[in-house]
Length: 228
Image: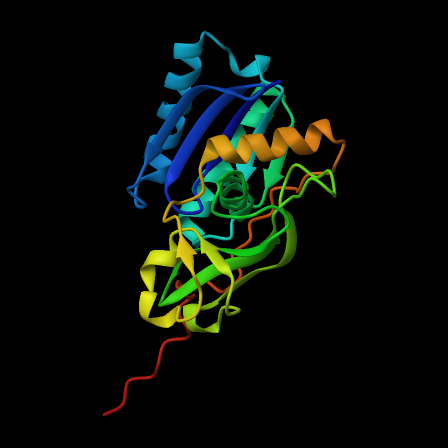
């Protein structure tokens, strides 16, 4: 299975996976240049791997939650490539990638509930609650229990492990919540989540973006009349 994955819910990240092996990878921490870097990164990764877009078994797009401008850049790119190359387009919750990494680490015991959070700006975080897979349930991927939501770090459920960049953003508001990992969603993990769901015959999301709140941009109102 050959999957190309893109996520721009936070940093811009691209990965090409053949089965479970990462063939190529790109990442940029600059959150202001997603639209400029994505297409060249995809072109370079495919060229280095000697793969054409039409050979892909699917394009995986992180659907957020994330800010308007950055998230749109990734989804528009993924949709355009899928249309031009005529390959399936698969949506995955961006927080699922962080949950996958957290559950695969030794920091989250099997069957344990935990939280994932990323930067939502404005003093808020995007977050969701998961349960790590256990040997008893036979699951491979963490189960989404609640969310995604957007809100203050102080409003997160208490007493659970927190994975993702939100763990390091507002330490003063996370009293009682053990925190670990400070990374953003990674395209390689996004592709692994999609692959596992495809192998299990589970449905994937469409690519409707999860903004969770209104844009900062506003349509100007009517002009005010000048007064003397």
